[in-house]
Every structure is written in C-alpha cells, then in structure tokens.
Length: 190
Image (cartoon, rainbow, N blue to C red; front, side, top):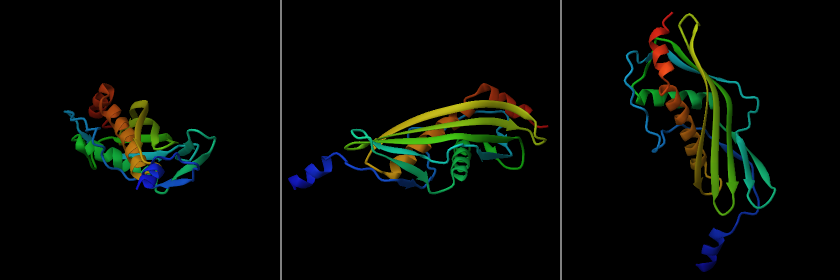
C-alpha cells in the first residue's frame, strides 16, 4: 500500500503527445452575464479559423527539457461557435434569422501543460470580433484576448477542456460586457 502511495507522488519522467477533443460545457465559475439589452437578437454567430499554427499547445516537464505537442481531435471552429452561442443563450441573447451576425476570427488558441507530480494547465485565446449587418457593413469590432488556468492530474482531458472552456467563456463575457457592442447591436440592421 505504501509503495502505491509513493508511486502516485513520484515525478513524471517522460512526456507523450496528446490529442484533446474539444467539447464545450459551461464552467462552474464563469456564470453567463445576465444582460438586459433592448435588442437581444443576432442572426447567428460565425467563427473563422485564422490561426497560423494549428497546434493546440505543448506539454512539458517542469524539471527536464522534454516537450510534446498537443493537438485538437475535433474542430476548433465548431467548438468555439457552439460555446459562444451557448453562452449568449444563457445570457438571453437570441440567435435566429433576425439581426446582425457576430463574427469571431480565431487568431490564436493555445494551451500549455506544466507537468511535475500534477499538472498546471493554461489556455489563451485571441480573437478579432466584429458585428456585421445583414448587408455586410461592420458596425462594431474589437480585438479580445483571454487567459485561464487550472490545476489537475497529468494529461487530463477534462482539465484541458475545462481550461479552454473557461477562456472561451471569458471571451464571450468581454463581448457582452462591451457597451459599444450593446449599442451597435441595436443599430446594425442595414
């Protein structure tokens, strides 16, 4: 029994590549903003993948110069679009056939896992956002970035998903928290 406990606390001595399925689920500590907008409608959310590097991130050992790549085993665009739409829905923003389109250009989606006995997880998302009228006119734009962190077991898919979802929720909160976005939402009909 004592040998098993000691083995559970031993430092990791190698690092392997990892593929993470992206799956959105609202994180418990990032409650959706309950906003009261006079024009709570979007035609839809559109996400474009503009990343120059498709790798999701890197895993590395804290005590040794060993690294391995982290890739996404599912579509980052579908994950980001579903996550933003879910967050907006929780915030009483309706998507359908009426209103402008919220466009997010995914410029960077990166993770890092610092491995020792356990792992420290970090995620950073950078997007260029815009609100476009049905005729294609840009009514609002912003460059946004969010960071999130987590701590857990080595190579935990759940911890990767949680840190990425937390960072995505922060992007959504920045959009809804922008007074300029709220104003543009009502005036972006043409």
